[in-house]
Length: 456
Image (cartoon, rainbow, N blue to C red; front, side, top):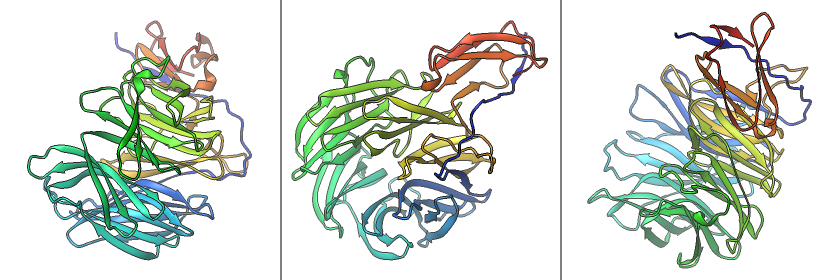
């Protein structure tokens, strides 16, 4: 017999009186598409976001920059358009005092073999353009496919990503080193995936990637001068974490914590988030795994952000419970984990640890089959709810139940800090009908014997 159980949730949380700012906003309309890929924080703690904005009825659109105040109000907007082209800001990064640079794609047409121009533009924090140059690959047989990332190293730029052959459409990965004015220095075509990399002060590149014949992720140490490989670490050698092979379509992240230690993170074959701290000689210092073992996805652009060695943020998302954000210290103790339920959420792009020990999250949701940008700014405890003086809808949870309404089974996803607690369910008259200890991050609740009704 089919029946329905409807749950009303009562989350018992204290109100927080904090000096930090936090907000949640959405940008976009039924006629206007908006998406943000990356963000930076300025010296006055405002936020500059880069992405795209265009009308669904047109075949063209513009790259889009928005500057938000520390409380989420739009200060300045800037749209960049070129006739008969579609533009998208894919990356942005600081270049100096009161300056930053964007990397923008230009699609001249929509054919799959279309060569896409790439523009680097430098702005000040008031979004005034300072300088601009275009680049093309040093070979005419390859073109950029989906993503290009860039890292600044002194007066040079190191780009990396995925490209395709014009002749046979074969995929390749590459590193492209150039001056900050766009002059080519070195180009290396690689035969394995590159997901993330960081440049060290002593002239090395630490890179996460994967060969096409090996399911396991590797971390490689390269010489920055000639892009040659010095050594490689296979993540299958990380102890105490089974199945460290990374799903082929998922992204892994790498970021330095100190000059001699870095953090590596990614979704494994058990669909959990694995996090490891290593030193630059590839000695494993700490490792852990947490999350959801059913339907978890990494952020599309950047799911790891380090403020300092004891404030590390890592995020993921799933189709049932929305965005998940955890804050860890350098020994990978999970300080807190929060879930942000986004109705009709569609994807998750990146996070940015902010100077007030909070975090900025950039995502996407579907509204009437139209994509809207979702921007969440948390405080240092992951909260985005109101205070006694300024109430707001509570959308950050440490426990989520789904599906709701449900039938024969309910699932409880619990934040790490709430494992060991107790779950109780009452009928509408207040009678206790179910009680169960929470011992892991995902708990299944059998509700076959409960009659159809509304429960608390």
